Image (cartoon, rainbow, N blue to C red; front, side, top):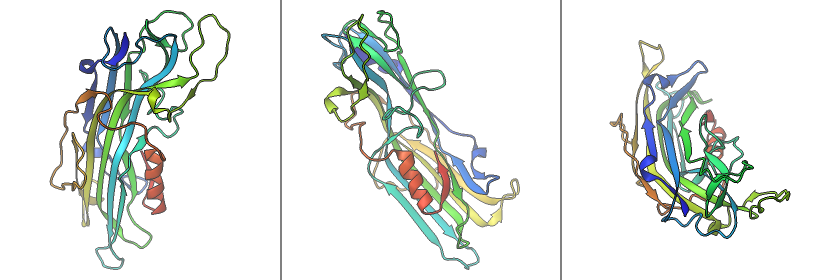
Length: 307
């Protein structure tokens, strides 16, 4: 017996945000949203699992199951210029070539994306045995094999300063982000105490013990891209702000060195799901993606926030 991801019942849905979510807001920032995506990993308990998780346990064990998301590459380009020539053109390139765990910054669930979504679990502590699994918070001995549905929803956005202290104004934005998501099980230590005991045990996640980490399935990598060209000499008659031409598209792969195509305005791929880790470990060292991204932008005076 064992726990596996039901590949046919699992999915990723990528959605295009409304065009109105691009432009200058009432805070004087150039704001935009990238594609959003919703991930569902559906688990099931089976007789002959291809991933050896939950098979032939000699005793009940406590594990944490959930969704881990990595930002495996990030590249941002910002160009500021002055049409009157009073300020020098300034170009900022921010690039991260190493993967980082991507999670809600205030979540207490590292390395999982979050604890819960609005209606489903994103991660949960469970007790696993050769009979099945159940939530660790349940006190009864029933093996309900739940929760079986784990979900994640993400929607990157950004608010950029439209002008530098020098007077140069924002004229070009490019952002390329590459993500990968996994359904992962982590062993919690120590072993869950036997039934009918009053032992109170402090369980602790030990992500450095790679032998106690089981990637059940993965989706991606996939790329999400946004670009904008801002005309400093022309106003949009509808908004009264500078005219903006933009595009956003997603691709079902990751190609280092790829250029952002300013002629591409739309594209949504189909993302495959496969068993195992897909050739990349979900456990990476260093700061989470939001922290490193925010730090780089703040240091250059380019943005007030990134999500």
